[in-house]
Length: 85
Image (cartoon, rainbow, N blue to C red):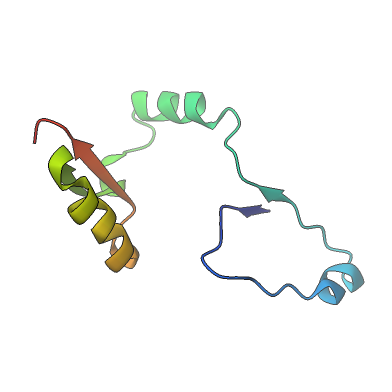
């Protein structure tokens, strides 16, 4: 299963897929993920805090938030935008 969007073209060797009788499926959208995820977080079966790797005010979203995701993408999972910050 390939989920998401690549930053650069990907080279897939279709002989490796066909000769090994593998199956490749692509997906871009989330189907029914949000209600299940919200329930898991609400029930405290998943702790969301470790995934929050930064936070910025609304006036810093371009330079701070997006800038961090571009320049330090290996260090961030989710950056929250807080309009009152």
